[in-house]
Length: 95
Image 1 (cartoon, helix red, strand yellow):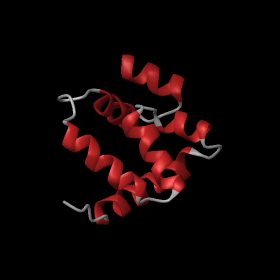
Image 2: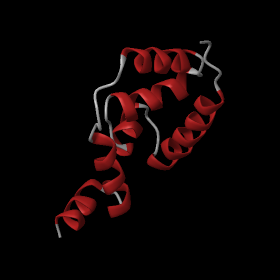
Image 3: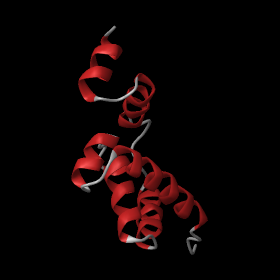
Image 4: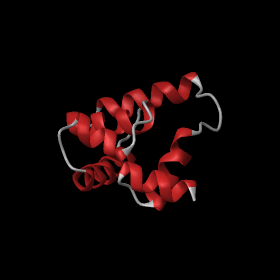
């Protein structure tokens, strides 16, 4: 019931709402090594890819908030996020 309310209120599907909530709950504090690795990966991405990943995963923005911040649509941000994650997965981080 609450999910349906917030889904309607935020203009997101209930699945997207659950996804956003799951992202907002950290499982454990990041290690220094992990933070360093993330910074190295982000530094090798294009500005738009870096920005969408920072907003979504480091700052905890919803898709709707990222779209507003980047003056885009939720659909475009979803595509950009997917492409950014794929690009990040291909980055080789020197040891």
